Image (cartoon, rainbow, N blue to C red; front, side, top):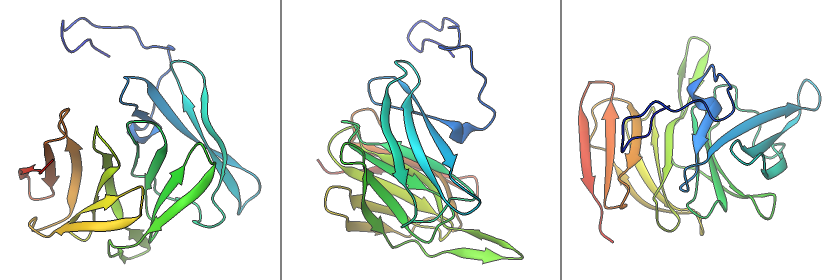
Length: 193
C-alpha cells in the first residue's frame, strides 16, 4: 500500500496478504474492512464485518437465511457513517444490512440476472456516495442503478453502456460517478447535490 499524497510505500497494516480483491473494502475514514463468511453447516452461515485496522467488529452474525449464500461475491460497500452495508453478488437481490441493528434492512430488486452454462450473475459492483445514503450498483444487465439505502427506493436507472458495467466509483466529493464497461469505455456521470 502507498500514501497517495507522498507516494511513500507503506507496510501492510497487519502484514496480511489478501488473495482476492473482494476480501477487503474500505471505510470513508480510511480503515480497511473485511467481510468474513462463517459457516454454520453446509447450507447456513453468517457474515461478520471486521475493521482490520482497529480489530473492532462492526457487525457479527448477520443472518443470511433470508438472502442466501453469495457463491460469487463481487463487491460490498459501507455507507459513510458505517450504518449500511450493501452486498453485491450472484443473488437475484441486492441486500442492504443495517449494521447497528444487526438485521437485513432491504432486499433491493432491480438488476436483471444473467446466466447460462451453469453460471449465474447479477451485481458487478456497489458503491456508496461519500455523503448520505445514495448507493450505486452496476450489473451484468448493462445498467447502473441509484438507490436510497435508507428507504430502499430505486431513484434512477442508467442504460447507456452497451455491455456489462464492470466497475463504479464515486468521486471523493460525491459530485461524480465513474463507470467502466466490458467494451473498454469509461464514463463520468455528473450528479446533482
